[in-house]
Length: 193
Image (cartoon, rainbow, N blue to C red):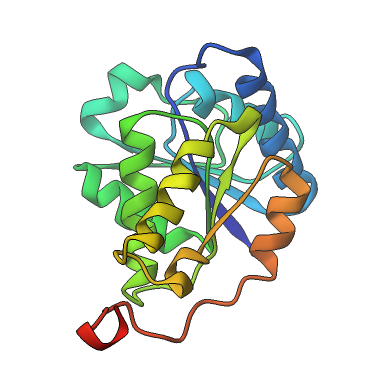
């Protein structure tokens, strides 16, 4: 993997561990020679992950829509910053620039970005690994919900296995580097339910 997109909150969250893990992820990517692609801001976990990479010599590319430029405040220390018109263009550009995706803790925006790219993978539009950094069990309920979707017949197990997760950064990166995209189509037929 040459570049990983990181989706995460534009706030720090209620526990300092989220900021610490975001910074550590940025540092780890830089020290591993993996470029960081992210939302381009200097605030919240976005700023923390960028700082971790920038301060350890990493290549950091931001993608920020015009209308968020004043709200999220663009990071000045990036290798490159793309300013785009819309959120959809932001996600499209990030997808073009990356070989994998990690979601850190965040809110609705983080979930929307992560799940759109996960769905693109499910539809066969890309074959990139998709990981959740499950800091302090932040994503435990989401992981359980994904299993519930399988149990209730709304998600194939092969597609469920596309969702990688770990609370440990090196372990998550190892899973992503060894990821094999499913070769089975997404569609569930009456015969398979």
